[in-house]
Image 1 (cartoon, rainbow, N blue to C red):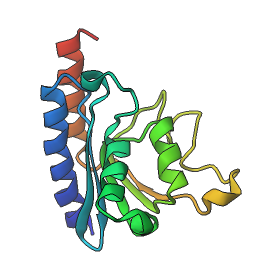
Image 2: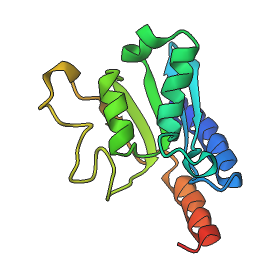
Image 3: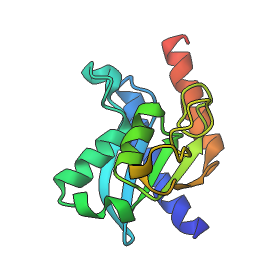
Image 4: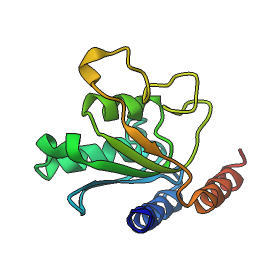
Length: 154
């Protein structure tokens, strides 16, 4: 299973580099169902001026556009960064059962911040919380984030 995670995370890293080249935070995301990529997302909030264009949400939209709306509850989300609160809501709304990510986002992350949208059981219609696998290619994800911060003087 780890090799499979690595393969999809390598694809996410390639997508993250596209985002970085466009001046966006280096986040790339995939939705995978039955070993097939059903949705892809590249972070584009800054470049499009639309904060909703986070890679995870773009990947969900792409999967829905590709005809997989009814399969999201069986898919795995891969992303270079821990999904933020907004993306975590979308993940829970669609009952995506597994999240695999590279690096944590402690201030606004849906799992590691005080706003633990990914793990709450307080919203009955969301069902079970997703399984979370973190730290896959963390060093590579962190390097891209460092590159973004340096380019933006953050």
